[in-house]
Structures are given as C-alpha cells and as structure tokens.
Image (cartoon, rainbow, N blue to C red; front, side):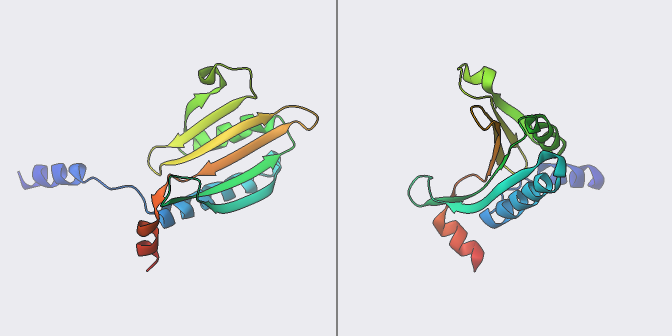
Length: 143
C-alpha cells in the first residue's frame, strides 16, 4: 500500500513553468545545437532580451538565417528530434505568404518559428523564443 501511495504522489507532482533563466539556458542549448549543424549553414546569429511583450514583461529570443533554402527540412527534423512539435504551418495560416512553420516544446515552453524567405536572396530564417515573463520574476530569480 505504501508503494502505491508513493507512486501516486510522484505522478501527481506538478512542476511550474521554467524561470526565464532556465528557459533562456535551454533556448541557448537548443540554438547551439542548430548552429553546430554545419549542413544547415546558420549565420547572422542574434541573441537578445526582448521587451515586446505586454508592459512589465520580457522574453529571450534567438534569431539566425541560412542562405540554403533547403535548410528548412533539416531544421524541422532537428527540432522535432529535440522534442518540438509542429503547431502551425503555412497550411494553417491559409495565405500565400512565405512558408512558415511554428514548433513548440511542451516541456520547456520554447517556440521556434521557421520562415522560408523568397525573393532575390532565398533562404531560411529561424527564430526561437521563450514565453513572456514578468520583470519582477526575472529580477527575483537573478538574486
């Protein structure tokens, strides 16, 4: 009986969302995994704290581009292997804009957007983001 109670308690334990620091660390790890994949040819790498959330909130994002239009398939495959699930693609958006896919990791709550760029300089843009966090929470986590 004790074993059953312990098993139910362990299964019932609910973890909250990751802190901004934890989410940013995981975003950096996942982004580094994409950057290290030489065949994807990612460059123009940018990592920034972004305050475009509602006032009083902040998030971290990563952005990179590849001049290889075919890199989108490799990015999709790699992100899915890392636990990301496609939640939106261009068919969901039902428009004629560039090919867009959105993948989300339900455990880390991180999101990656892949956009196939058309025009004179075709390629792929990848943007990874944390969710928005209250600035007070991020300041408390840093102390």
